Image (cartoon, rainbow, N blue to C red; front, side):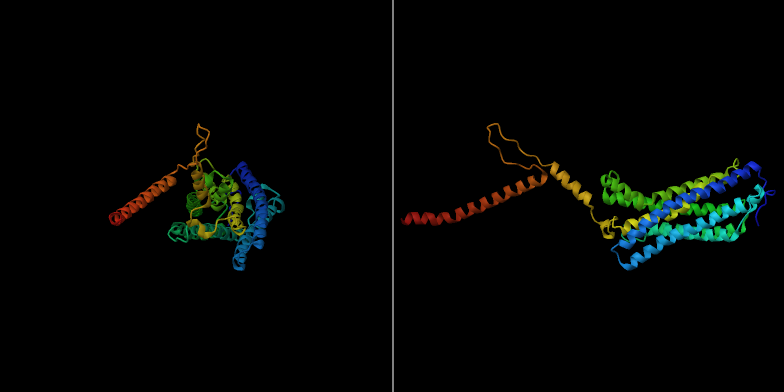
Length: 358
C-alpha cells in the first residue's frame, strides 16, 4: 500500500524535491537511451556483416536486441508513469505523490534484474575467454553473480509490496544487490585490464589509442564506475541523518539502466567487427612485443665509419648475437686448424720415407 502525503511526514519542499527528481531522472534516462539506440544499430550492422558462424551471429544478435528492447520497454513504461503522475493525476502535489502503478513497477523491476544479470554474465564470459577458459579465474565473480540474483529476487518483491518510503529490509537488500554487482564488475574489470596490459605490454596497452579503446571497451570500465557511484550515493543518502528525501541516487540509477545495455553491446560489437584479438592469441606473445624486440635489435646495430686513410672499412654489427657468431667462427677456425695440423703430422713420416728413397 502506498504511503499518503499526510502519513509521509515530509514537508512540501521535500516532496517537491522528490517529484523534481522523479521528473528529471527519466529525462536523463531518455537521453542515455538515445545513445544506446545508436550503439545498438552499429552493433547490429557489424553482426549482420560479420563472417562468423550463423549460430554466433544469431546468439549475439538476440542478446543486443534484448538489451535494447528491455530498455525501450522500460523507457515507455517510465514515460507513461511520468505522464500519469504529472499530467493525468497532476491536479495537486498530493495526487502526484500518491500515484503508483504496481504492474508497471513489477515489469520494470523484472526487466532491470534480467538486464543486469545478463550484462554481468557477458562480462564474466569475456574474462573467461581472455584467460583461456580457466574456471578458477571466474569462480569468485560467479559466486557474486549468484548472490546478486538472489538479492534481485527480494528487490522485485519489495518493489511491488513496499511503500514509497524505503524500508530497512529493502535498503539492506538494495545495498547487497549493488555491492555484489559492483564486486563482480570490479573483479572482472581488474582481471581484464591486467590481462590486456600483460599480453599487449605497457607501451602498446596504454600509450596507444587502439590500446586505450581496447581497455575501455573490453573491461567495461564505465559499467563498473556507474554502479560504484550508485552504491556510494545510495548508501550515503539512506544512512545519512541529514537526508530526509533520497533524490540524488535517482540520477546514477537512471544512467545505469542504459549503461547496463551499452557496455555488453560495445563488447559484442567489437568482437563481431573483428577488432578484438583472436581467442587463442591471448596466450601468445603479441605483435607489439615482437616489433619492440625488432626495434631494440635495430637500435643496437652500430656501423663503423670510414677510416682516416679514406678507405671504407666493412660494416660491423656489434650486438651480442654477432659476438656469439664471431666467437663461434673463431672456434670453428681453430678446430679446422687443429685438424689440418694433425693431418700434417700423420703425413710427415711418409714424406720422410719418400725423401730417403730418392
